[in-house]
Length: 460
Ligand code: URP
Ligand code: ZN
Ligand code: ZN
Image (tube, rainbow, N blue to C red; front, side, top):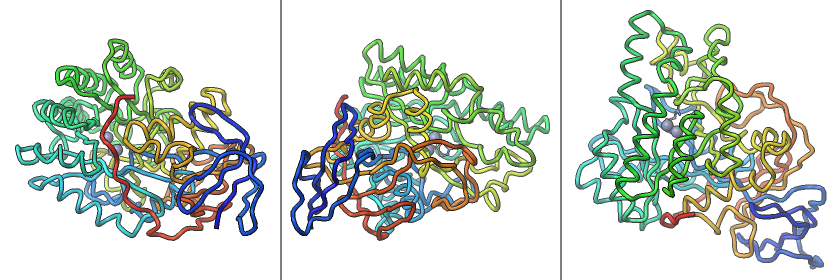
């Protein structure tokens, strides 16, 4: 049976048009004006936007971290993603010490296989490098894993040294891979943390004070220098400060292939959240931490100018009760991370397009097209085109919403944006031609989502 989406406003990163879309099996097979045939399923979309399914290239589902495991697994996380208009994620398979990258991937495939509502891929996080591990990289690029992550923070857990960073950059760069970096100086953070704890400063606010903007900016600067030395492209995840953005901007002006993502939390929330009454500040314990008000204006400007290319969620959910409260008496024991997968698209539409900070095409680019292009999914995903996967969102730009943990699909006991109001809701979500979300209700089958191998990095 064909599905005909009639008379919607089709929005891509490059333009808008009023047209019909025909879906057959898993693909978009025609875009234009069509007389429906008998047996066609007709979806009326006049007055609605038809968007390419959003792509979230920074999630952590079923991840052991901070002495516990994320509250969302691949089923709850990808269902929440679908509810929010996201039809593909790229999660992180993290190398355990002493194991290989392939072993990490095998473990993460096992967590995801048969459990996903939407399609998924994996970046590979390198935490324990040796020759054998380094030499796995080219084959992994060829097998559909062209992106590798390293952490310049989380000392004693994931943190790598500069030699590792340089070696991974060189190897990945020559193999067609892209290296993603968590850029904060873990050694600096360790010293500052020790000083704060010794002074009895244990509340959630001190998490932020132990990780000042300069700890991020020093690492961004160092990473860009390493990337330049190696001649490889570079990607910085969850960039949070105006100073870090200036470094990226100046590197790009010098012609370096440096890319960066930011996340809604750095655009919508600020450091004052850590002073919420009781232990409420723990909801926002994430790394990098929330920043002083004012940074967000620079980040929005970076999104507009193209110096920041991607908005991803860094979804890494932990319940306040039973997980975040591990650190009630010591901020270093609060598991780092916050939920965001379900709300990213709506936040960017309401806070970005409706508020006049970005136009609708930039919005589509940031949440779907640019991530698809940078991470080797385009044009299979990330656009509306004949031959692309029929990952589509019928979006009502006028529908009002109030974000809340009540009724959310994310399996976590709070929402960092509780009470935030705006306009714009996904009404119908299609994943490869299958309707998976319909007017507020998940309508898909868990296990529908499948692994998508990605192509090597290509400069954009
Ligand atoms: O606090 C965060 N961001 N938790 C997830 C792990 C990471 O650093 O991305
Ligand atoms: Zn990180
Ligand atoms: Zn992350």
